[in-house]
Image (cartoon, rainbow, N blue to C red; front, side):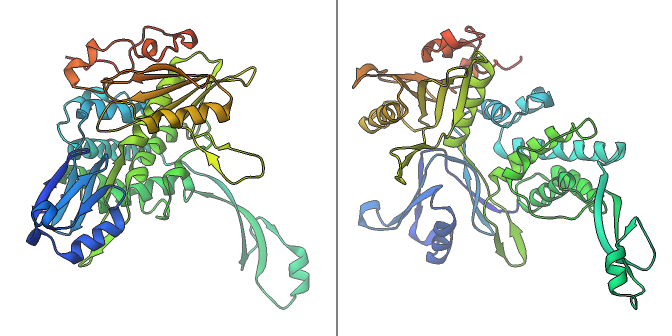
Length: 413
C-alpha cells in the first residue's frame, strides 16, 4: 500500500477523530470526491469537537491524503464478498475459488485477483496475443493494397498514392482494455508488492502490443467474441471488476493514486439479479434497473431494482427492491416505494430483499399488492451451510428450476 496510516471504517459504522487529526483542506478535498461514500460531520459541541466519519455502505480504500487512507471494511466475510463478486461479474468459469477462500483482507482479495488477471494475460501473450486484419487508408510512396486511382488522377504531381490496405495488428480494443486495466492496477496503491511486480511484468509485455487508451467498465460488456478470442471474455470480466471500482484519480507530489471502492448496495443488487437468472425457469425474464415511465409524455420515471416477467406473454409477475442497509426492518418508505413500483408496472406482487435476516418480517396485502420481505443472508461464513432455502423465502419456487438450491455454496473445508 502507498499509505502509511490507515483508518478503519466498517460498513454503516462511524469513527471519531480529534479535531487536529485532519485539516480543513484534507476534509474539503475528500468530501468533494467521496461524499457519496463517507458522510463527514464537522467538529462542534454536538460531537465533543471531533471529526465524525460515517460509512454509507461502501467497501474499499479511499485517500484522505498521500499518507492517510480510509479502509472501508466489509461486514461480509471476505469469502462471501468474493462469491458475490463471482456472481455479479460472471467469474464462475475461472474456477479459482479455492485459492481465494484463504484471503483474510480486502487488500489480499484485490491483490489475488490482480495476480490472476496478470497471469492469464501473460499466458495469452506466450500463446500469441489476439490479432486481426484492420482496414487502413494512408498516403504511401509505394503501392500497397488498392490505390485510389481517382485521387491519384486529381494530383498527378504527387508521388505519393492514397492506398487502402489490410494490416494484421494487435492494437485492438480487446488488447487495449487489458493494457489500460493493468495500468490502473499499477497506479492504485492497493496491491501487495508481489502483485505489483507480477502486474508490472504483464504490463511491460503488453506495451509493444497495443496502445494504453482509457476505457470504462461499460466497454468490457456486450463485446462479441469468436473462437480466436473466446478466452478474452473471462479476461474482460475481470477487467470490468477493476475498472468498475476504480475511483477518481487523486494526484499529489508527482504520484497518482486510484481509490478502490465497491458500492455494496449495487453489488448486492447485481448478486441477487444474477443468482435469480441462474436459478429461475428460463421462461422467467429477470430485468435490472428497468426504466419505467410513470405517465405518457412525462419525464418522471421509476427505476425498480429487479422486475420478473413472463417471457412468452410479457406479463409482469413481481417487482423486487434490494435493501442493503445497516438494519433489516422494512420502513414505511420501503413499503410505499415497492407498492408504487407495482402499481406503475401493473403487477400484484412486490418483495423487499435484505442481505441479513429480517428482524420483523412483513407479509401484507396493501392496495391490491402483496408485499413481502425476504432475505438473502450473507452472514457469518460458518453459518452459510445452515441457511434456509432462499427461493422459498422469496416464494418464487414455482418459477425455479432448482427449488432446493442454496444461493451461496458453503466454503470447502
